[in-house]
Length: 233
Image 1: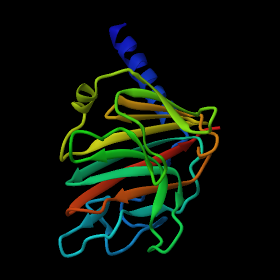
Image 2: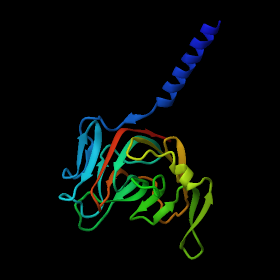
Image 3: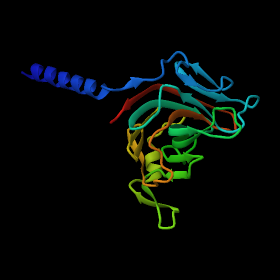
Image 4: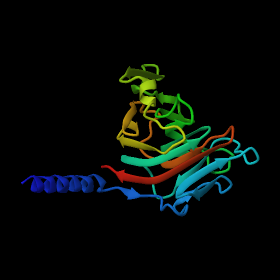
């Protein structure tokens, strides 16, 4: 009887895992940059990961991005693993190409931020798009007041330093982004880091590009692997 119960339990877990995986699409093949567009001076595939790298002799003038060419992000769940050495990076979603004269790989919009340091990993940042939108450990609601100016209502749900303990420096970490209508939630290694509700009808974005960031400044390396997305209704 115990053996039968064990078999049934394992089978149930297997079906649950299959159900959870259903609907996800891999968007990086682990070997090439097929389906992605970034400046080849900085982006390549190394050790099965999309790799962005700057050096003292090969810096980027301004933040540069590698853009997913498979479509736009709207309502979705995105999961990936990242590793960073030095500097700052992020995952752009519902984003846009910046105008003006530039190299064609400049992006603005919602960003799931992370860094080699201790302060910003997990926040929702607006790249060229209203700055910090929701800090780590906060549930933030954005809206416009009677004069049309942006206002933030931030309610604390966790301690930033405690949340930061879940992040493994210099190692692989798992990022999960859930975007449903104008409600966004970030997780790193299974720990919720921030929540944003964007009621700013003037600026908020219903859809847009997915891209990965390589930050200007000191030499750095960032890597991404096991990238997959599930579109929601």
